Length: 276
Ligand SMILES: [Zn+2]
Image 1 (cartoon, rainbow, N blue to C red):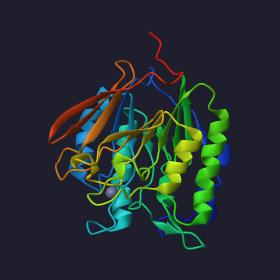
Image 2: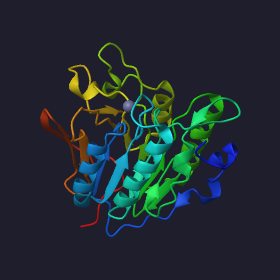
Image 3: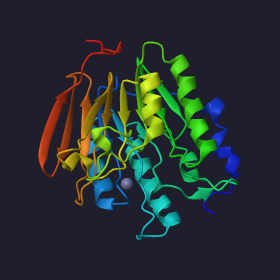
Image 4: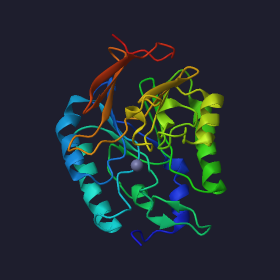
């Protein structure tokens, strides 16, 4: 066991889960990666690149349960990277299915270690950050009905306080039916988040999980569900991760991979608009 805390501690940071969000300036440039799967070269690349951005989002699967070092070693190493990154810019991290180090009494696994990443400027599962017209909700990977219900309450609580903020969810699995969930054969995403998106209409959902969807003709790194933009940077076997930079000043999102760059406009559908 990595943690000495009781399993139920994980879920009940609710009162403390609204984190102050310290930024040097407005979060105009986001860098989004996912599915690094303990690629230390890709973490090294983040250290070089992060300074060009105002906020870094790592949308799950920081660790890799198959092979590599044992999970506790991976956690120690990744925590060191998060500390270095957090010294440069705020970092929002959600768990993916490869990040689960503990099992609750009901058999559901969860990323307990993330709850103990007690670094200023790092936002983790079940926390929400507000900053100047931006609200970011970090959703944990869920298995089983209890955890799913907690994700639903997290979203519903934040929906009630959303106001006119631009609302961004960090959620590892892409919504079923979206191009970001195409795995080469089927749209293999998460039906639950697809329903939540339809109901709550966030502005942007940042995920990953389906590594190759950006590289398929029937898939994509971006999609739109109603007015919600959904992104999945994908994954490539390289020292440079695939990534998406979202620029709220220029109002565009750019995907970078070994195949080059693609860019889309971000429609000004939200009440959030950066001050001049
Ligand atoms: Zn993955």
